[in-house]
Length: 223
Image 1 (spheres, rainbow, N blue to C red):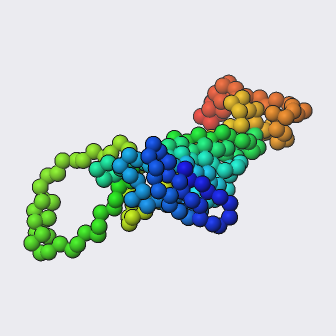
Image 2: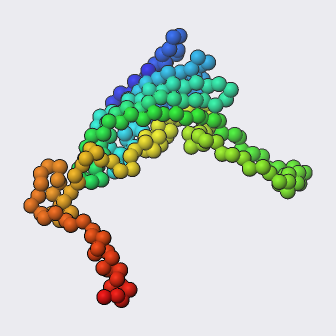
Image 3: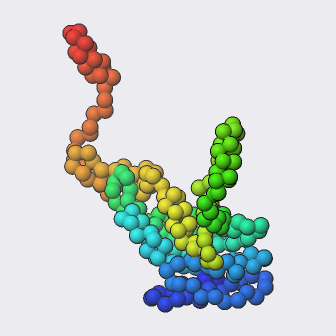
């Protein structure tokens, strides 16, 4: 279990499963793990972090209290599969009444981390000619992976999970957040929040199909 404490200190990362795993130390503001700590049985970890610690500090990225993260990491034949959940409470603004409200947040996390290939060396003249001949041959189109957006590249001997967590939290945010499904919104005349109380403004008449037809007739020059 990862324990993230307040302040700028590093936190101890206790790796727990059916067998005893060693304890490693990670920086306070990142989920940065050493690849060697992912043993063959896998690695299970939990942590709490604030939004700014994950890079979620935009004007629309506000949270009530810490975010709880549970992750399972498995490495088999190269790629590292990461699954888990993030839970917390987001503070969102309703698109109808413009008030802030608390929104329970549960995000399912899934990603595959693939080691980024080393820099390709400059081809020789013979290799260049062979490449040109291959390029002249018709190539069958390659279908893109269905989960291409869930594949992340990493370098070195550490795995930084914070960017993946941040991205998936952003993608899970609703496009049109509502404080409730039957939100009445604001009065278009006086701006009163109709969820709190009714105002004295007369109801706004809806569009009349006869008015639209009459407008088209006048536009065409027919009285």
